[in-house]
Length: 372
Ligand SMILES: Cc1ncc(COP(=O)(O)O)c(C=O)c1O
Image 1 (cartoon, helix red, strand yellow):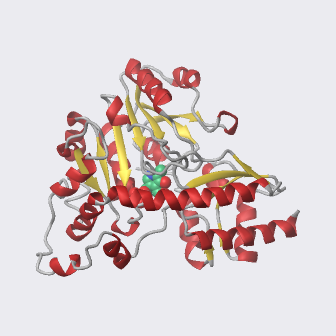
Image 2 (cartoon, rainbow, N blue to C red):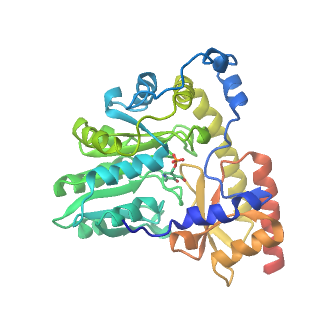
C-alpha cells in the first residue's frame, strides 16, 4: 500500500524536540505519572500492581476500561468498544475494516491528514468537503450532497476539528447523518478532542448516539492528558465492531495491561479530569484571543472546542518559511498550514500550561515586530 507522506507528523518529528517553546502541542498539558496518581488519590496504585503477571491483556480491552469508556455515550454497550493504540490506530482500523478499492470516501478538509490519506491508500476515491473560514470552518450541506455518488461508503468528519477548532453541533451533525443515511454510508467521526469546549455548558452528541451507521473514535491523548499511555478506542454498532475485531486481530493482540489499568482509573475520574482541562483551554483561549485582537498580522475564527486553532497570517511568505524562521530566531514552534495544504495559515495549540503559552506569544510578538 502506497501512502502519502503524513506532513504534520514529519514536521513534528523534525523540529519538536529541539525547540525551547512548543506552541504546536495538541494535547492538554499531559499529566506526569505521579501527578496523575495524586490527582486521582491513588498514590499506591503501582505498588498494588507489582505482582501482576506481565502477560497479554484482554484482547478487546480491559472490561473495566471498556465499561468506563461506554459511559461517555448515551447508548453504547461496553462490548461495542474496542481499545486501540490511540485514536490513530482506531481511525486506521475503521478504514482497514470498512473501505475497499472503488469506494468513494468524502472527508472534511482541512483535517488530520490520516482521515483522508489512509482511505486513499486503501484504494478509495477521496473527495474533499472543504471547510472555509467564512463559514466558521463548518461543512456546507449542499456541497456534501453534491459530492455523494452511488459508491459513497463513508463520510468522514473530525469533531471537534483539528486544525480549526470548529464544532459540528447537534443540528448540523444530524443533517450530515441524514445525507449519509440516504446514501447508505457510514459517518466516521474522529472525536479525539471531544469533551473540550470553550464555553461552559457547550456540548455536542457523539455520532454513535444519533446514527445507526455512525462510527466514533476517541483518545486518551487530547482531552484526557494521558498521551503517553498511547490508548484510544473505536465504537460503533455491533456489526461494524465485529468487522473491526476481525481486522484488529491482525494489528493488535492486546494493549499494555498497565496502560489499560491506568486508563480505567482515569475513566473513574473523568469528570474531574475534564474540569481541569477545560479550565486550562479556556484560560489560554482567552489569552490568545486578546493577544490576537492586538496583532494585525494574524487573525482567526475563534475555536469553539478542542485545543487547537488555525490562524491566518498576512506576511509575504509561506507559513512554512515563517515557522522555520520562528524556530531559528526565537526557538518557538508552530505548525505551518502547509502541512494542511494551506500556506496562509498556522496551527497553534492552546492546551499548554499558561506560562508556556505566555512565553511563546511573547516570542512570536518579538518575531512579528521584526518582520512587519
Ligand atoms: C484529529 C486527531 N485524531 C487522531 C489523532 C491521534 O491521536 P492519538 O494520540 O490518540 O493517537 C490526533 C493527533 O494529533 C488528532 O489530532
